[in-house]
Length: 219
Ligand code: MN
Image 1: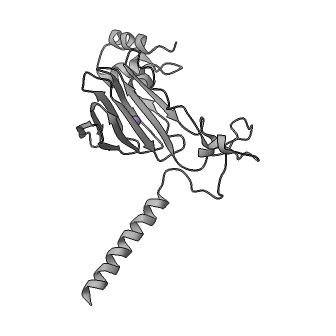
Image 2: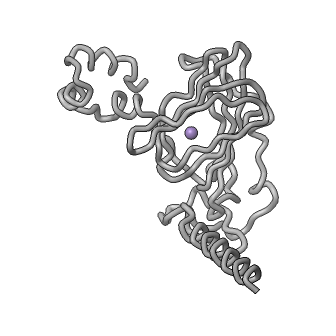
Image 3: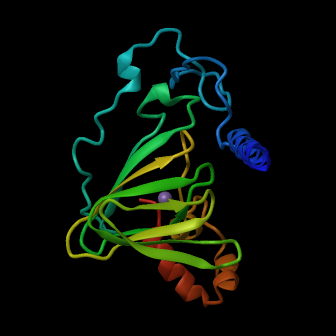
């Protein structure tokens, strides 16, 4: 009789954990079948108000049909299908995106304040990693068909290791995960952070701060 009891106890623990995971999901739960975002509404709520009428087009996007253009300083581009592109995602707590890399391309250190990220390598080879709040770097080389997870809010990066352009598909548990690129956030904010704040924070001279700021000046 011990085995069934142990099984029931294990099942109870698993169900409890599943429920807790559901309760602690990042976006609030749904209160109706669908709530297609009315992106033009003047009403401000947490998320977007629901449209009165909707159709299949509100749940569709072809934004990932073509690969993104990686011809930029970082050799990297992300194409996201958030609630802003698929209004039917409103209240569903989901986001789907693709990241394309040129040879040597880098998705620089950044965080998503509202979501964890699970990334699947379509093709190529990348070095990826995140840093815990205890300042431990958790990194790995990942290849086509493999998956890596980036916990919510932690600083992370993805770098193309190969000579060919790799591509990643990533899912997030928020309709709008938000992205803060660390360097651009600190050195390219508007209005600008005071030079002396950055100078003390980074333990470098004002000239160095101004040099980096010039690279991230809003265009
Ligand atoms: Mn990310």
